Image 1 (cartoon, one colour):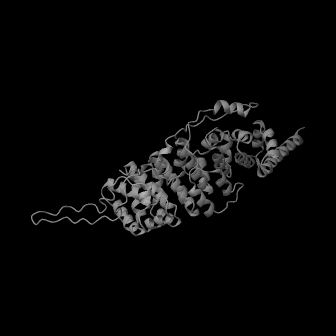
Image 2 (image 1 turned 90 degrees about the vertical axis):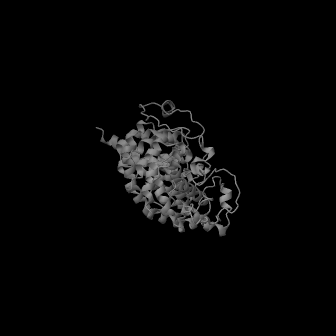
Image 3 (image 1 turned 60 degrees about the vertical axis):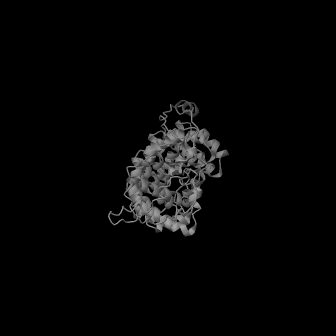
Length: 436
C-alpha cells in the first residue's frame, strides 16, 4: 500500500497528540477566587501538543471569500486568533524510487496462442499504481506532458474492481492535488471527483482516508467546490466524520470547512447533519481534531440555523470547558465560537447554564489580549438585556477585572468593558430606586 497514509493530520511529527479528556464543569461558590477554583478543577498535565505552526490555507481563503457579518466579532478577528486548520495537505510519504517513465505505462498486449484462450488484460494502471514508494518530490516532478496521462491512469484506477488498486489510485491523486493548483484543476476536470466520492464509504479505512484527503486537497480550488457538492460528497463526508479514523475525521471536518467557504453551502451542510459529529469531535477528538472542529463550527455557525443546531447538539458545554482549560491553546478559539452562539437566545441560556459567566470572568483576569477582548464581548451580549445575568457577573467577582480591563486593555476591550460596567451601574441604580 502507498505510504502516503500519513498525509495531512497524520504526519510523523503528529505522533504526540490525543490528550483530550473533558474537564469537569466548574461550580464556583460565591466569594471564592476563580484562580483558586480553576487551579483545583481544571489543573492537568499536558503532553507535548502538535505544533501550531501549520498552514492555514482554508482560513486564508475564508478571509478572501467571506463577507463580513453583522456582529460584534469580525471574521478578521477570528483569523487573527485561529490557526485551527491543520496542514491537511502535508505528506510524509517514503522518499524512494526514481521518476523513470512514471506516467508512461506501456500498453500490454498479451500474445495469443491459437490453441489457448487469451489471458485477461491486466489493469490499465498496472505498474504505476502497483509502485508503493512515491514521495511528494517524485510526484511533483512529473513533467507537464506526462501529467495528463498520469491523472488518467489514476482516475481509471478508481473504477477498478480491486480495492488495492482503488486505494493506490486515491493515494496518488491525493499527492498530485497536494500543493499545485494546476494539478487540482486538471484532476477536477478529469472526472476524478465522482469516482472518489463513493470511496468515502469504503470499508477499507486507508482507502477512505486517501479519498477524503484527496477531496480535501481538491476542494482548495474554488472551481472544484461545486464539483464536490454536486457529486453528493457532503453526506459522505459526514459519514467519514462519524466512522473514519482519527485522521479521516479531521480531514473530513476540514473538507466541510472548505466547502462552507461558499455561503450557500453552509445551510445545506448543517441540514445534512454535520453539526452533531463535529460536536462529538470537539468532545472526543485529538488536540488537532478539536481545533478542526472548532474552526468548522465557527464557519458554519455564521448561519442562525446552524447556531441553533450547535446549541441543540450540546456544543456549549465543551466550549465553556475549553475556555476554562489551561495550556491547551484552544481557549481563545473556543471563545470565538462561544461568542457566535451567544448571538441567539438559546445560546445565551446554555452558556449561563453551563457556568460560562465564571469562565469568561476568569478569561478577563488571566487570558490573552485577544482572549480578554472576546470574553468581554461575549459578556456584553449575555448582560445587555438581562438583569439576572448582570447579577451573576457581579457575584462571580467580575467588577475588579472589568475595571482593570477598562484601564489597561486594548482600545476595543476598554470600550466594551466600560459598556459592561455601565450596565452594572444601571442595574444598581434601578435597584436602589426600587428599594423602599
